[in-house]
Image (cartoon, rainbow, N blue to C red; front, side, top):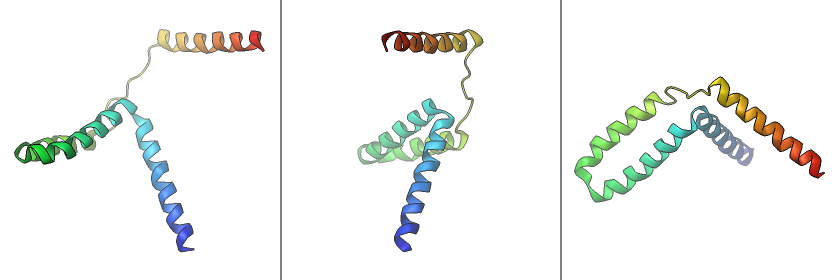
Amino acid sequence: MAFGAFVDQKVLRIAASVVLFSRNPMVAIRIAKDVASTKLKERVTPSRHEEFERGLEEEIRRYPGEIPRLSLGASLLIVFLFFLLYLIMYLMG
């Protein structure tokens, strides 16, 4: 039971991370990059590390922020490209 609970906890943590990432992937990638650079800068410049870490905490607090939306034309272009891809696969098969 303990092993099952451990695995369940880890799987739920991974699922929560994926859901959080999918809300605004571009900002999530930037936050992950900033977290990694914070760890590196901690060793290099300890004096500026606290200031950078406060800015990072603010960015994490505001996440996901404004989610970018596609215009109607961009959405129609994506749908058209999927139909074109489907047509090509249909004709090749």
